[in-house]
Image (cartoon, rainbow, N blue to C red; front, top):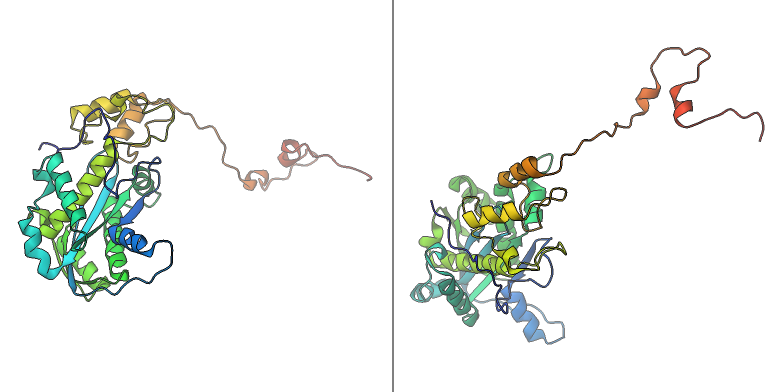
Amino acid sequence: MAAPDSPSTSAAPAACQFPSVKTDAPLVDSYTFHSVDKEVAASAKGKEVEQPAIEGDWMLGVDEAGRGPVLGPQVYGIAFCQLEYSDELKSLGFADSKTLKDPEREELFEVIMEKEENVKYAVTVMSPHDISRGMLRRNPYNLNAQSHDVTINLIREVLERGYKIKEAYIDTVGIADTYQQRLEGLFPTVSFTVTSKADAIYPIVSAASIVAKVTRDRLLAAWNFLEKDVGKGDESRVFGSGYPSDPKTVAWLENNLEPVFGFPNVARFSWQPVKTALMKKGAKVKWDDEQASIQKYFSGEALGPQKAALWKDFALASVGAF
């Protein structure tokens, strides 16, 4: 199956016009952006104000972008609007973002921002570093578990901001029934529908899909490398789709392996193609460090007049007077 469209142009955008895209510093730690927080901050104008009461019943959709690629972040997007606005959202032309071209996605994201009084959104950008750190733990924090926790946190944060979410539509990760039961247990006032291909069925999930996809694509196109000697040329950002089957992605992996330090911070070190490349072309390391243990100084055998090993190792000597 062909990989979905993703920006693979050699030039980064001149300016990032989407508030969910943060490229002012290298993406090491994951972050979350809520459009409603921006609205409240703008109305406050430097003074502390209370969150206004939110009227009406709302619906919410959740989808992600970048689950499979070996390069770049995974982004979870949510969109929410009042229940009666659902038909209007459909008429605006929202569809599964995977069927759209980059300019179409960006135009629809701009529609969401223009309709901010009716459509709200949020994203959590999961950095490659955080994804890999979780998956490479002694007890792995797998991608399904990470994705579930991000979704749960986003829904909780919307509810905490005063929005009365009555219906939620989720593109499933893992077993749909099990996932839905967990969500219903955590948020009993919300009616959940968890299903595959939700972004092609429900306009509110399509909106969430577009938010997630545009945010991820823009982050990659203007990727800020943590490594000082990387990213000086446009060719360093020709990532392709990020999928291991994409020739441009394969070429990027071939050209950006540093034998000692591995890959730049855009790579997911928990993905098999990265592990394989490091095993084949990375510098060989031999670990000779002896595990420290005081037990080696106690053999249980009498040494007679010979000094114990501890005395030799620490150059200890007897003293008769101080």
